[in-house]
Amino acid sequence: MDKNHSITRRESLQKLLTISGTVALSAFSGWPLTRLGSVRAEPATRRFIVEALGQTAGYSVKELTRETFNAAGGMTRFVSKGDVVAIKPNFSWARRPDLAATTNPLVLEGVIELCYEAGAKKVRIVDNTINDARRCFAITGAGLVAKNTNADLVFPRSSLMKQMKINGHRLDVWPVFVPLVEADKLINLPVAKHHGLTTLTLGIKNWIGGVGGRRHALHQDIHQSIVDLAQFFKPTVTLIDATRIMIKHGPSGGSPSDIAVRNTLILSDDPVAADVLATGLFGYSPEDIGFIRLGKKWGLGTDDLQQLHQKKVIV
Image (cartoon, rainbow, N blue to C red; front, side, top):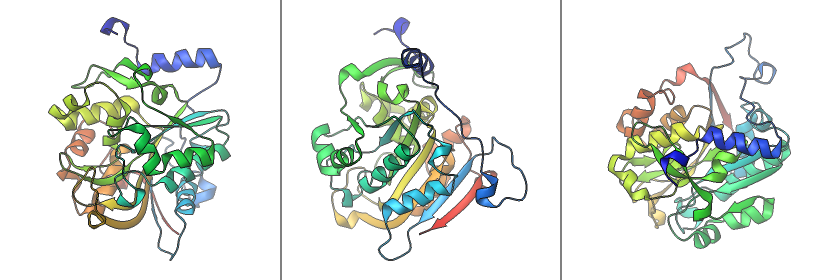
């Protein structure tokens, strides 16, 4: 498809809504004051960040996931009855869950269950893997999660990639994984880990798995490409899985010695802020990470967590 026939995300959404007749994209409207005990009103546009820690022996990852969303007012703040929800995890590598190369399947399962409890009509798991998708989905636990929850596990194929206008500072038109842009709500669910090229891969970088085409070409200006894609996708919310993180030999790893247990989840509607908080788990400063610096520069989000509603949860 050439540029003259490329479609934007907005046009794709409008087309889907015309077909389905549903109303999409209800926005997060701020903190529920009664839930958080606030004594004064805050601007509805003020963003939030939640840091949740599993510190009880034998804590449940799924319960930690639930309490993370509860601290932000519950999943109903993000997902409405009848919504089609796309979740973008990172299942790029055919690695066991304990090796931290991929999103913790228990976190994914917990998010899907919360979406259905909030009234979602359908939840789709969407990722364009690097290794063979069937092997990735089998070994990482994604396939079992889909079976347990009745979520759709979407296999990447060329028919689901459409040329769309990215309108980025570097990327213009690029093949995009259609289920991500046709969803009513989009949840970014990356794993936090080391990356040999970009130092870390967190929430903003996860969108490279949301496109097709010659993805190696994105590496020529990787940090700007990452930010261009993040500005295009604009997720409803980002939940960074740092229950266990890869501290070296990323992004694929392969050895238990590459892993550190952090028992942490980070939830935010500010993609830059989520990544900023996650960098501390690795001992880095946000200024060390190129895509965080560019994300702030181009207005994707803030690196000043004091500008956000902050909440800490311990399970």
